[in-house]
Image 1 (cartoon, rainbow, N blue to C red):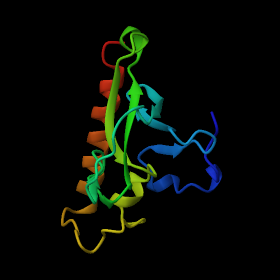
Image 2: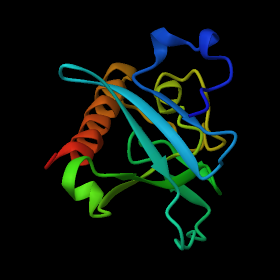
Image 3: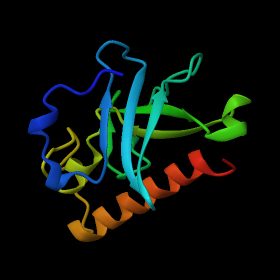
Image 4: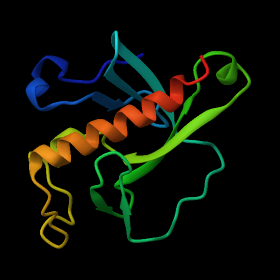
Length: 144
């Protein structure tokens, strides 16, 4: 696994999870998130043979940030345990740069910012991101 560049300079206080694209394998990403009892890491891949939608805007299923063009990617994680060994996966449309935590806090702006300003308070956006992240991670680990 290739660790993200600038790991020591990450804005740790603003991150609900650590996510990064593997620079050596652009179809692979990693997500490290807190989970009851500790921290888990999940390998994400761009599913093979998936056709990209031709819509101009897509929305991240974790942080609900809208992005133009290819700002959101379909990423799939192999399920843990026997289901994963059988090839079962869980997928989600996620910010291509995995910077969801920064988008919900306004530390990073989508190119659509200003056209689609969300009125939900930042604390509520963070809570929604954490809930959506927990739901995704739970799906990966259910049945392990």
